[in-house]
Image 1 (cartoon, one colour):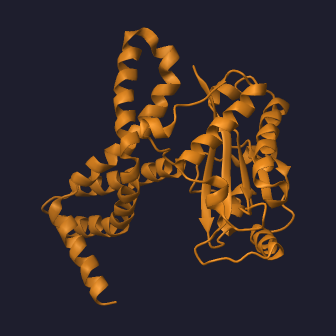
Image 2: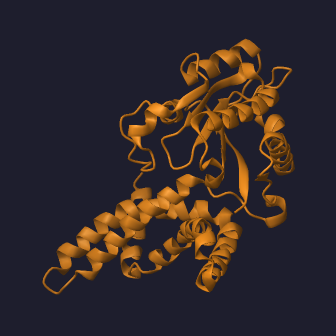
Length: 314
């Protein structure tokens, strides 16, 4: 099965770094929003670059020291995710995995400036080991400009090409994935998968409540369903709005999933297991559209009227 080196960027405007710092540095005892975190294994996480101070203070001090001008919508910091296909890490020791992430950090430090790195921490307590490297996007002439450092889609493709070439020097089995410029795909963030699971559970609970309505409990059950809908519906609309920009990816993955299932039935199930799990996970995003369609239209209409009335009274 192909093994890929993975590099992704997430830009953050303003300076709301507290939640990200709490996640990266494992400052919370429980992580209800991310069930993949096994806190029993958090002791195995390690830093390649330890933060010298709170993220927000580092960002503030670094920008002030550069003397650059900022705008309200300026990107203050960038969160970089580095990992690889799960198969790549199988059989590797902690030292071997650390060497992979140290090499990735060297690649990034050379491009974004070691002095601009806030933290580089490896998480060993989730399903796949990965590195979070956060940095302040300051150029060599001290301008705060994430656009110049990370660039547009063409520049991101160059980033991926260079990252793969650098990592493949030491890890020749790593492959370069097909460019999103060619496929039209966009990476679907992991948070959307987790949000999909949560919304599906809520949606199914609403449907179960509706199915339990009888002539004896209609009023009570309908009100209970409406209460659940009032919480679920705005989240669902927001989620589906975010999902629109990943439609090419979803359509392609659903098609891929059908092909994988056919190949599994033909006797290739051992080879295709991991790929099928991934494709199924991503195609489940599409199922949420169907879940929305199963909610009785009269309830959705009542909910929309309530939202409009609330907006008018503001």
